[in-house]
Length: 204
Image (cartoon, rainbow, N blue to C red; front, top):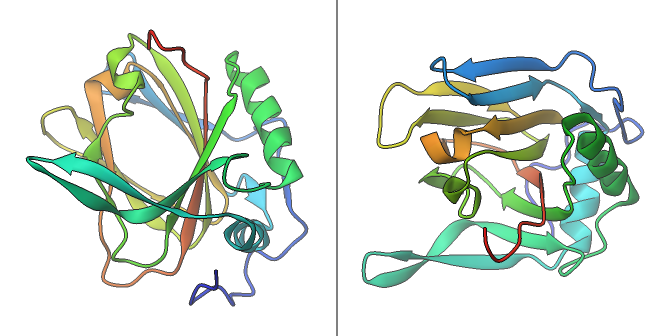
């Protein structure tokens, strides 16, 4: 797959990341047990890593139920290793994140936002929203996009701009008590998000 807008010279350093997770900032939402942790620029060489993952992955068109019909999700998705080899550094990231947060993050999946028309509506993680507490980490590669979080059912939203190798971790009750979204944009270059989750069993 070839994407428009991937010729940027920014983010082409050797691919690496901060294994010590220095400079992570915690944001507690509404005085509750829902929280975010944000580390801008956690990954160097983010553009190079994005292009490697885009080219080596068998991207899938997802579907979801909307009222009485199935609709195509406006982004491409993939799971690793089912849909591609990924990159060796992703397993290094997984181990560093698992050690730091005390949770084995065994499942890797990806979402590809090709341009500003790709988006994700308000939602909580399909499995984790049924759990008391959970941890999920994501790394945003490529161009930045707005990421919104609000209380479940509506309310004032928090906005972060994620891209260029940023790390975002969602924890505590956030998937159950809050929703998040990536809105459409008038113009946006490609962004790829790599998600690290625990291997929740059938009971969750």
